[in-house]
Each structure stands twice: as structure tokens, then as C-alpha cells.
Amino acid sequence: MSNSKTNSILIVDDNNNNIRVLFEILHNSGFQVSVVKSGEMALEKVPSIQPDLILLDVMMPGIDGFETCSRLKANKNTKDIPIIFMTALTELENKIKGLQLGAVDYITKPIHVEEVLARVNVHLSLINTQNNLLEEISERRQAEAKLQQTLTELKQTQTQLIQSEKMSSLGQMVAGIAHEINNPINFIYGNINYVNEYTNNLLTIINIYQRIYPEYHPELAAIAEAIDLEFIVDDLQRLLLSMKIGAERISNIVLSLRNFSRMDEAEFKAVDIHQGIESTLMILQYRLNDKPEHLAIEVIRDYGKLPLVECYAGQLNQVFMNILLNAIDALEANNNQPESQQIKANSQQIKIRTFLDNSQQITIAIADNGLGIPEEVKNRIFDPFFTTKAVGQGTGLGLAISYQIITQKHGGTLECNSTPGEGSEFIIKIPVQQS
Image 1 (spheres, one colour):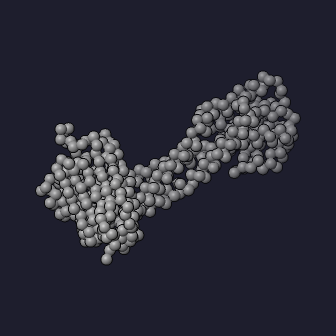
Image 2: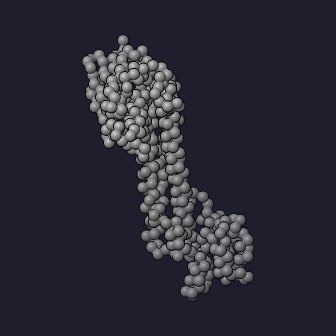
Image 3: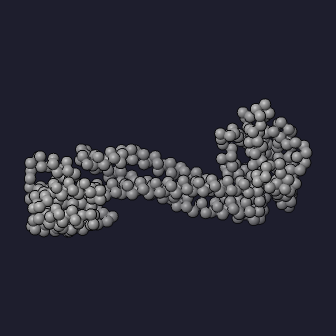
């Protein structure tokens, strides 16, 4: 028998010859063996040594095996230790009595080496398998809790990022967070396959045991029912699959965060503009989803065929973030208006168009169908510190810094077209190549 640890066995017998034979058999088979010669000594010693299995003689002076078994099973600290009776009594009623008291098996005297080892190995294999399965379930729950904690931390981080409109620090924060999340999620994702493999091996052992011993011992049946073994076996694979899907989801989010920040690209670099837009949309997905206080926002993509564009990718992604946030805020504000004033409330949309103006310039247009911007406000939206939001909800720097990034850093233009009651559109134009 192969064990990850040495199993311990307690022999309870008053016959020295039986003790000698059993000790030799079990010790030579690699087990850790302890011996006591009475039921009283067993009751005293078992709680402290906690053996994996007890071989208990039935006929002993003082407390007999039946009474010893009854007391051990009545103790919460020893009730789960499997007990195999050893007896020369062959009457069926004696065997039934022992099993009803909680024993898992019988060894008939005189003792035969093959019978002892076979019965001991079977029951130790079962208890080891159950312990390993419970340990795997515990590890899976810990991994699931860690995954949930990571998801919670990620959501909190995203909320902090969205609330921050200081462009110079936003990219660094996103890049750092992506790096820190990437390590634990890689650990979780890398170990899921091993957990799945180990679980399959343990389930295979249980299936083989159930096939060989189709009739459960009453105590085993009670344990299996108590822990709902059938449900665990059926549900475990689904849980592992859901964990893998969750880990892949977080990996994709981390990749989007890293693409969004692009802090490793301090200089101009030719990048895929659509990838930056999609990364920003993924970060903002929770703001786009349906919520009790507002309807879901539909994103319509009308992407043209664009070449790679030379730009400061991280800074350009921050511009997308600011404009998309303003569009989302405008649509949410539309929900707060009286019903008679809602504009297209049942179809809240953000439309993103990209196209190549000519061989030298691309256009990115981001439009919403909200309430629009009054003319007197539109003339000031790119002014630093100007905001129409409530105190604490905006600094008035988002669009101002976006304008600076587009015009000063990329040599492009940023314009806003808006009609009250119909919505707003921000149009970004930047050259394909920087001179």
C-alpha cells in the first residue's frame, strides 16, 4: 500500500501471541503500530494518539470489545476512527452487534496474514481517500475564496481608477495594478489543472471501491449521506470549470488593463487604435451594464480599416476613458429626468466610429444620444477646472487634459458637436505618423 504518510494502527488485545503476530504483520508492512492490552487502556490512550485504525479484540477481561467500541463511538473525538473487531465468535448475531455499534469490519481468529492485510489496507485506503478528497475540496474552496477576493479587489481598483481624472497618475496606477493582479491569478490559473487531475484520481479510487464493494457498510452509508458524497462527486467538476473560466476572465481583464496603461511605451509607437478602445470599454463594462437605477447602455461599433497609428498609447487610452465616461454620465443623467423629458430612454446608445480620412490622418468619433450640451456650456468644456457636475463628482480636468494630449502631444484636434435633446459627439483627429 502506498501512503503519503505512515498510517498508525492501535492493537487492543489481551493475548500476547495475537499481539506478537499482529505487530509483526503490520510493522513489516510499514505501519506505525501501538499496543494496549485492555479496553480501559484503549479508552485512555486513543484520544491522545488518534490512530488511523483500531484492531479491537472482542473477548477481553474487564471492559469487552463491544463496550469499548460503544464508548469510543460515543466520544466526538474518537467516533470517526474506523474499528475492526477481532474475534473467534462466528455467530451472526455477534457480527451484527459489532457492526451496529459502529465497527467497519471483522477479522476472524485464528489470524491469517493475507486477511489482516487485505482488510486493513481496504479500510485505510478508504479513509485516506476520503481525507484527501476533503482536503482537495478545502483547497478548492480556498482557491475560490482567493479568486473571489481578487475579483472584489479588481472591481474596487476599477472604481478608484474611474473616479480619478488625473491623467499623469492614472496610467501608472493601472499598470501597477495589472502587474500585481497578474501574479496571483497566474498562480491560481496554473494550478487549476493540477487540482482537476488530482480530483479525478481521487474520484477514480472512490469509483473503484464502490464497484468492488457495492454494498455500503451502514456507517459508511451514513457518512456518505451526511457529506452528500454523490453531490460532491457530481458538482466538483463543474466548480473547477467555473473557477477556470473565472481565472481566464480575470486574465483577460488584466491584459486589458495593461493594454490600457501601456506604461512600457514612453515613446511614440505604432499601435492598434481599436485595441485601445476595446480595452477601455472592458474596464468600463460595469458602468454599461443594466442596473436598477438606469438601463443598459448599448455600444455600437462602426470601425473602419485603420493602419497602425504612431502615438503615446497610454495617454490616448486615457482620452478614450474620459470621453466615454462623460458619455456614460450624460446617459445616466438622462435617466434622472422626468419621463416627458427623457430622450430615447429605451435605447441608450454610445456609437464609436473610426475611419481613415486620408493617408495621413484618422478620425475617432464617440457619440451618445443623451440630453446634449447647451451652447454656453459647450464653449467651456475644454477649460481647466470647468465642470457642471456636483461637488466631489468631477474636477473639471478630464476633458482639459484630453484636449492637451490630443493637440499638444499628438498634433491633432479634439472637437465637440452637440444638439440639446439629441446628444453629443466628440471627434478626435490625429495623424497616422508623427513627424
